[in-house]
Image 1: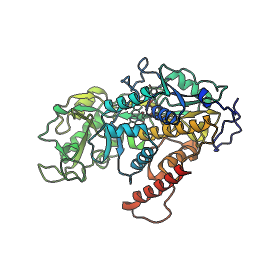
Image 2: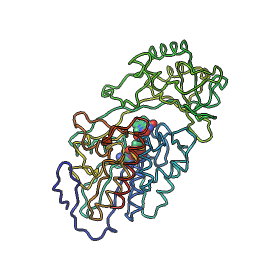
Image 3: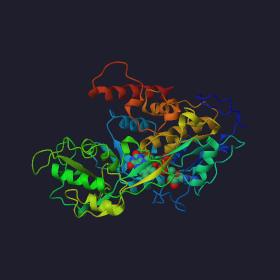
Image 4: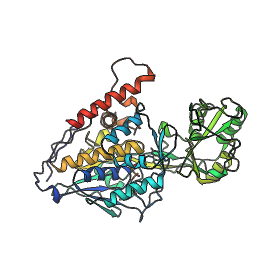
Length: 458
Ligand SMILES: Cc1cc2nc3c(=O)[nH]c(=O)nc-3n(C[C@H](O)[C@H](O)[C@H](O)COP(=O)(O)OP(=O)(O)OC[C@H]3O[C@@H](n4cnc5c(N)ncnc54)[C@H](O)[C@@H]3O)c2cc1C
């Protein structure tokens, strides 16, 4: 029996009175980034974990690999420097023994100031660690219903991601009172490296000296005007009847950005600042950047070029980009449905469902956005599940930390306007003193890491 006695924002403790933790398990549904991280955290603390993953029997529209922890789109975990919010979040997770961070470091590919990985090696690393762990049992099976509360106080973590299978999504909708929402995320095309014209495309990272990790396709003003005219006129895939176009600002389709003004792309993904074309010695009018997709450097991802253009139109329009006239596409861009709960309505700060304290949500479905953020919620859910199972009160990380700031976003946002968010310094409590922008990140990081260390000690 569960003794709930919950309030809206308090952590919920299960007063099960069980004294046999070894008899009980943490069931995790979904073997993606969040589910694997949660499993690792729980097993590392001595708990038995059963991890359900529906692949390879069933694949979501974006998953293709039988491996666990598949990256469905970009191979980048974004900025690495600690004075960026996402770099800080990664540092916090590294300090909390994150499996996904270990994998990222072990399988990284050069990507300037970003932490990008070879997606195959990354998923293989994680799959091996999870499958070989003595306390983790992996079951390759789709879960169709959310398990009922267990009489023995076992805990369930739901980590089925933005493309959760329909039956389980329906089961969650029933449980949360249909307080889940849909929005859209986007995939950028990948091109074959040897189909690129390197006499036009130059290699450089923004502001960096030396060789640089990105390939840059430079555009003159005239070429830019031709390109955006073609992009505007190109055929787009129409939205389905049930789809309502709601995009994240950080993941807008190029055509949606362009609809905001002719120069929007030049201030966004096509920003030329800090990139000098060696042929002219000057900054081009605009630039399309390509980032290594695999360690071998045989494929490149078009940075920020997520799109809802039809496939033939993507080929036609993107081949207008200088240096890409003969481009062969390994993958074309697309946009997918995404599922998440209205966290401020349904979740506690410990990621427990208010209605079901034995059920925690992790990953994108909890209301965060992004690989790193989803993993972070898996990390916290795994630790909290262990506390609950062992009769301790789970404790949220301090709000000064990146982890705590994400939790604050989930729990303190206005429910009616709630939207998932990437980590950013806007989610952190203000610094309380005026600091110039250049040094603000460092101050957030110093404050956060000090708070994290104190929390770990406490
Ligand atoms: C198309 C698309 C592109 C994205 N691109 C990016 C990007 O480039 N960068 C970024 O930072 N974020 C991106 N995201 C957002 C998000 O960060 C990732 O989807 C991330 O993988 C979420 O992690 P997760 O663990 O919550 O879910 P996932 O990694 O999707 O893992 C969920 C797992 O659960 C399994 N599963 C689902 N239902 C069931 C069931 N009923 N039973 C058993 N198993 C089940 C799935 O097969 C999957 O393996 C993208 C999202 C989408 C949809």
